[in-house]
Length: 81
Image (cartoon, rainbow, N blue to C red; front, side, top):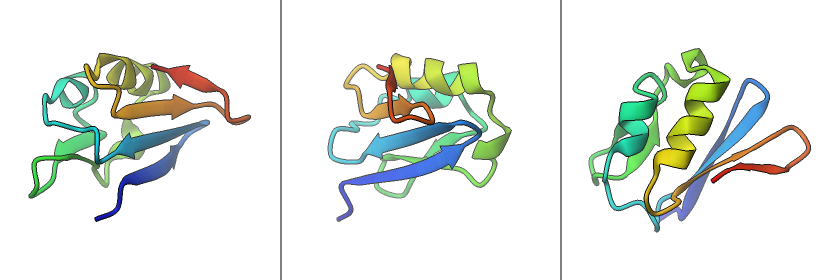
């Protein structure tokens, strides 16, 4: 199993740690265009993730109670959580 996936969205890099995700869904509520559960009940990127706004993506990363999502800027600085 892949332990994490990353996607570049605008000027952010969003990382999903698949080993930490326990399926609360707070990130999906915060950014429904960007995330959904996969067949294993783990959050995954949607094809429409590029439509999500920067602040929406950062809020989604901040909303995760187990810090399974991380947002980084262009220079690799961690923005959330």
